Picture 1 (cartoon, rainbow over the protein chains, first blue to last red):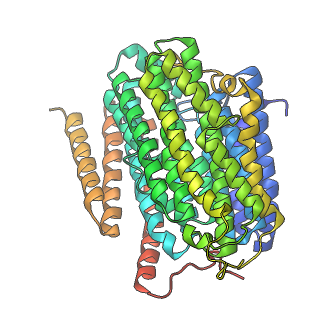
Picture 2: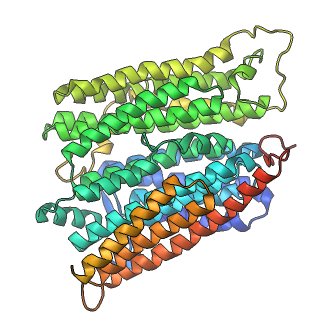
Length: 491
Length: 104
């Protein structure tokens, strides 16, 4: 396509059209149509991301209507990074979901809801104004609640709780958006940021609202308790999407509001960093204490999200040093992408084991003689990324965070990625040991209650291999993440 | 106290009280109503801010309309989930995990 700005509309309207199509098609058509739609959506997003990486940010007014009443779409490097992650992980999960009905909660409504989440995520990443950000985040939240509810009876309670948290977060975000509009007189992201910066407005209270609103949605400790039940009781493909992508959207909006609109707040940045560190520690300890595989993986999301919040204190202490800023942004980008792939892979692996052996209890799985080798291999490879071993993106990300904390003279923050790596190695090795050890009670082996197709057995492994390969990509990720970086806050 | 300040304080009080109730209540129906009240509080902030100029700001009114649509949407989803969760809790033995990996 010659005009990249048309792609901006396509990445949102494409999946939105698929919501309608998959909502009315007969059930047997859904997997092939879903696969084709996912391929098209992913291709559009990847072309757009590549274009942004090559020639810088793009913008587009839908139907020629500019602000304040029109919808402005804009994609910079950060949008491109999240769009590409959503495209690739989304495609992988779609392949898995199309191959195994049980992974979708055995329900045809999975498809429209999943494409609604996808459209919402893309809309969050290309939204050029604050109100569309709010609406897009709400679309993601409501569709995600619906997806959790596909898990059946045990999932309805957690889905309801997730709804309360998501809506409370949106409500607080709406108040913050109203405050920004009252002061800046515009909802357009860039213009609002410039006007707030020049007006010298004390944005502290708006920033607190934004942090609480998006901390709730991103499950930042101590606002994390809703996540493990919701992600743990959802169907397999849903857990993968929620943990890998949906919580990242809230983090993305927080980064946008913080660096582009409100401007960094040094004190609040330290608070965010400390909560992130607490998340790494507390999420890790709770993951270690779980007895069910899906719960281990869900608590690991709480822990892994913690690293991302180090971006705020590290950039605020950088004092404009371009090396430190680049390391902080690059490290965060690597961890976002690495966690996205590794977590999707782990949830698909856990779901495959649960569906094949009928349980995800670690003590029950210990009775399996030789669990699906490709799946266990996938878990191991994903664990390499999450624990931050070279050459994975997890290692590259944590390394750059350490570089940023040393470079800015804030040595304390370096302890978080290093200590957190040990903790994640511990809670991921525990289930892996169970899989690899010979069962002690040979008399009562756990049989396979159903078989898994080839695609189901290899999709998690393929997803897990991506961050391992991308770890060798060098400066591509930091370059992309900082294309069209924030005014004043970035390189 | 100006009229604008009065309405902003009312909105803040609604929002604050609703948040407290939402976090403390156990009954999901109470929580659903609390979050509706919180939503009204946030929309009242928008309406109050819109009335600062004469004629009122149409952009903020457009936001309030969208906000009301979203409120209706999540209240509907919430009520359905609430019914389902309570029915599942009232029917012991039927764990409701239809098709949760056990399907043929």
